[in-house]
Length: 132
Figure 1 (cartoon, one colour):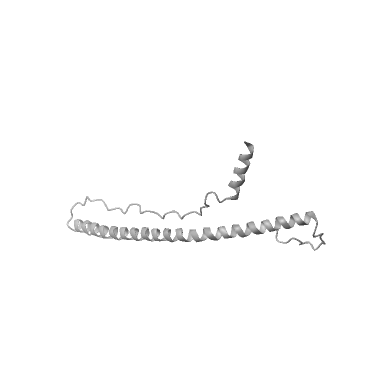
Figure 2 (figure 1 turned 30 degrees about the vertical axis):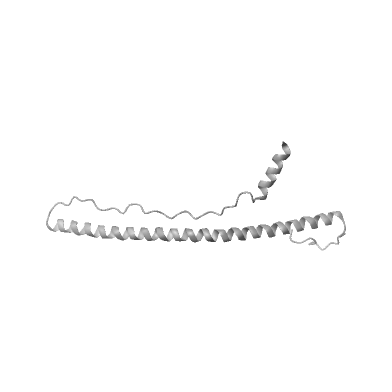
């Protein structure tokens, strides 16, 4: 679809076949331009959503770091108590503290196509109306 006269052969420019090719070609160009604009709009919308996702993910990472830091402090206190009990030759019965599972990353937002803007849906609706 990139060229109308790509093979170098002569054409009858006023012929019906060539005219149909020109019409198809211009339709293809308009459709490609419209799809490019839609992709650009979707990309701009995705940038905003990704900014929100990044801030939420940074907050999650910060919370996990704080949680790990608290765990290290509790673990150090537990180890000191365990060593103290060993030096005094006493039995130490406290279980070791556990960090537990930290929240994993949030899933990245998917590219969402707005409803009602797809050409395929319009064609399906037209066909269903003609059946009735």
